[in-house]
Length: 285
Image (cartoon, rainbow, N blue to C red; front, side, top):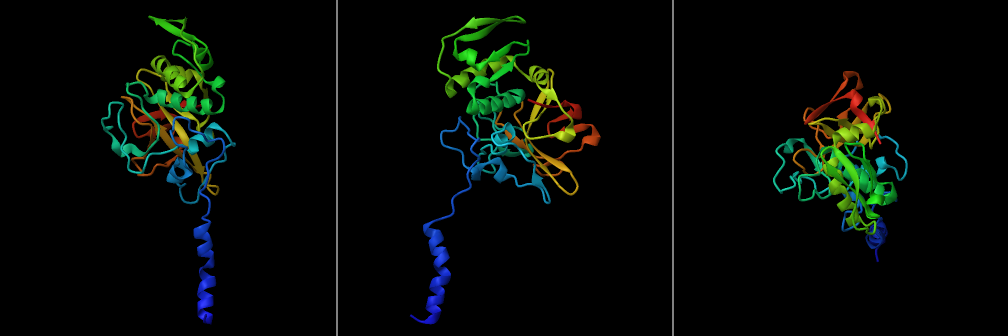
C-alpha cells in the first residue's frame, strides 16, 4: 500500500468509527416526562431545540426537575403544523402560531385559555407526584385529584358546589383526564387569577402566567425566558390556547415576527398577539 493510501485510511478512520459508534442523541433532563405521549418524548422535538435564544442571550437558569425546566422541553409537533380547534377546524389566526405543542385538545370545547395552563400544570404534577394535583374552582372549592380517585367529587346547584361521590379508581393518567373535565368546566381565569401569586414583570421566569380574570378573561403561559447578560434585556416564549378550545401553541410576536418577545416592564402593558395584559397581571404558582 502506498504512503498516500495509508494517509487516506487513517484520515478516514475517525469517520468510520463514528459511523459504527454514532454520538448519542442529546437526552431530555431526567425530570422531563410527558405522560400523555404514547412514545417517549425526544429532545430533538422539544421547544428548547426548536426555538434557539436571540443573539447574545442565554436561557435563564431553572432548577432540575422544576416546572420551568419541564415547560422548556415541551414536545412540539413538526414545524409548520397548523393550530386546530377541538372540532378539527383551523384556528383563524395562524399568523400568531410559531409552533404547536404535541398534546391532545379533547373533543369538546373545554381546553381553552386557563384550561390549557391547568392541563399543563396538572400533567407536570402528575409526572412527579399525582397527590399534589389540585385546583380551586371559581366558587373557591379546592378540588383534589387524590380525592377524585378515592371516590370524592362535587356537584353544582346554581352557584353552590357541594361534595358528591363517584366510583373510586386507580390514579392512572386516564383518571387524570376524567378529573380534568369537570375542572375545566368549573375553573377558569377568575379562579386561576385568585389561586396564583402576583410577581413583578422584571422577575419573570418559565412557568409564570399572565392572567386576566374575567368573563371574558385570558391566560398565557410563560414557557421559557432568555436574557442578554450584557444588557440584562429579557425575552419570553409564550404559549396559549384560546376560544374556542384549540391546540396549545407557542405565540409569534406579530410585531417582530419572532417567537421571542422582549420584556418591556416600563411600558406597564404586555401586548400578546390576541390579548393585552397589565404588567401587574403576571403571576406564579
